Image (cartoon, rainbow, N blue to C red; front, side, top):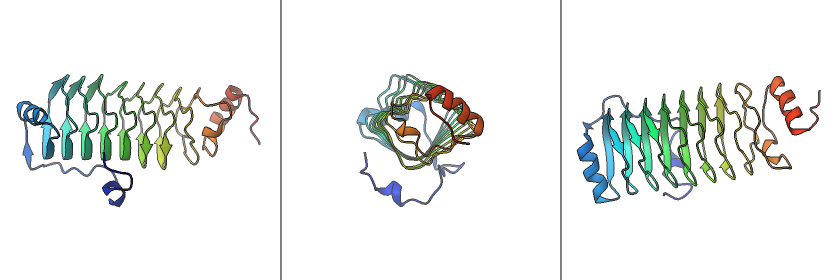
Length: 227
């Protein structure tokens, strides 16, 4: 995984910039051949309707790649580098992206319940109209995360380092933020109920909520909300 402050920090603001027309289109067999070599480099390539099951990406690098309507079942992306990658209408089942570096990566209209991103670095990631309920983002390093119209029901965000995150119109019910300070994060347009926090509530310091959310949180946490 690239070191903190690497190429991702030098890139312009924004999310995945993958062009609609890429240099080449690769089939399933070609991708599996690259995986077999180990530490493969996949670049300027589009995949459509791909179905992979129980494959190991072997710390591969994906750069300027588009996946559309693909299914990943038990695929292990642990230790991979994803740079300028777009997943559109894809489904992830029992997949892992632990210790993966994600720089300018979009998940659009994807289903990835239970996706594991433990100890990953999210340099710049967007979750748009996607379902990552029960996902495990514990001990992640988050530089920039945008969540819009997505589901993170009962997802874990424990002991993570968050520099900038934006949540808009998403379902964050029972989000577990134990040990992760959320100072400066706005969840006022989200469904944000029954968060799991530590006893001193430092995780919620500076959290922006709507009046209705504040009242609900006050009752839940046993604290007093000022007028």
